[in-house]
Image (cartoon, rainbow, N blue to C red; front, top):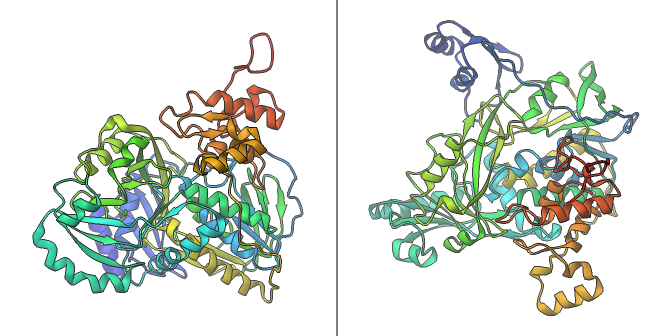
Length: 569
């Protein structure tokens, strides 16, 4: 980077308010600007896509202070004195994949997350698409991880009994005149993506996706694309890691680290001080904060928010795969552009958009984002109607200014490994990131022994609605709980809900059960089954009804019984 030229561009844009300096491990930006958006703009102006020398953005925005992480309410000494071989910080799909891979070695592995469950941030707040890698520039680390991870999905999902559908993806175009050019691009695609590409004429496109917009005149089809439940995969990874000897401690937040001579000696948490041999930083949007505590900050994260709409299952008849009409994607070059995605659970997702934000934990949704994504993709599917929307969600992506993944050991600190900047296609890349990070960790630890008791298979919760009539009758005869339907929209039985609370990674919240077996995911969004789920949690956990939470601490659903201390329904 030519610092003088970059500084001149910054001076022109920001009137001398921003300075850039070349430091040992990156390029540091300082100054004071008028808004967070301007601070991000400055970072993007200076960054080089895929560069290994990163932007460290210390620009302040007038009148704004970056929000601190929301801490857990729990304070105890449950982890005091623990000396794991590996401490993994972050319970998203990447952290849980790393934990599972490391259990293939005979190691003491501890994964911590500040939330009450795994997969509560980006790993549950995305569209579940397994990308073929069509919009990632060759040469980037995330391209390598995407393609490698994509190829691992079939085996990983078989091992973990996670539903996965290799549906393929249509990238549609509005002009037939593009056909000759599309044929010319096929060699490029087949050299650079996961899977294979082929050209689809309008006639064949109509046969394969009858309800796609008449504006689509031809398409490229990428057979490597697929669909998975992102939080379902994360939970499966976590359960298999625990079954193979790892420990997961939730409601556990890193508060400080003691670093001496470039080596992490201890990690202070709200649940005691831990003394790990190696630390893995898989903290998502908080990865920069963890790097700072470890005295190894050589990159910056600028959070990027995306909002997605979920459609009722009746809309699924209009789409068999995943499709997008070119010319309707987001203008941002930093998003996959979104599209119309048919999910493995039978819903349809529309979105997301991409909006820069300084709020790392603001998952609120706004009508502007919802209407924007819905209207944009209505060009591809004229059948889309707002009356089919049953809910919305927003997620925060952990982007670096270089728009690439960071998977490497520390630069100033010798016993930390970073798996940072993992934005889309992080879900696709997770199996590969798990392998790559585990390899770096074992090299740092030195000689390790294979875990001869490692078992790759994780048994999923049985789903009676997916069984044959004979199998279902036999199951109910063995356990009548599977014949008692609690959620009519999703056909979820009492037996499945009880199973969810009795796994190796237990849960005791309404939302936790919802993520595992889907009561409340249907059209009524829990209006009918919610009270039954609350009763089942209270009975199983032997707690009063008014102590049952929706999710986070403080989200107790019932206020209490009149004249008493227990909630009632």
